[in-house]
Amino acid sequence: MNTDSIKTHATDAMQWAGSGSKLTYSAIGVGLVVALILFKVFFKDFPGLFHCIGYSISSQPNGAAAGQATPTAGSRIKLLFGLALPIGAAYASYVYLPRLFPTVFPG
Image (tube, rainbow, N blue to C red):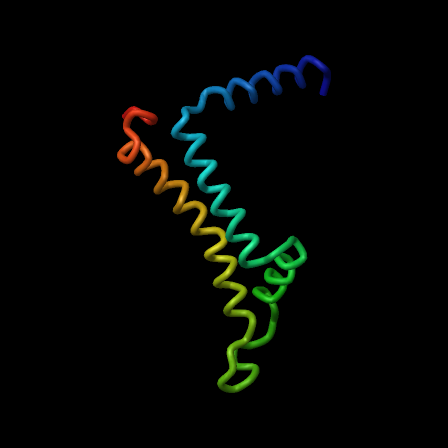
């Protein structure tokens, strides 16, 4: 890559980022805040996330100990909620923010 193509790509990226609306950026912000809160609650830090991923893909059968829950199911649920809830919150804020604040986000 030469310098001209890097400048072209940087200019295109800046134009794309500047083309969003307040509603789009607000929805993305809400999704990121929810994701950060869930990350701190569920995983605490990055090693906790990797530990949870390791448990979720472990090869132990679900019935390893009769009548006892394995960490695999809880890890999978944490990962599912950690991915689905921020996306749902961002979508909900994209839909409902104009209804709740019509002067800030005109339709």
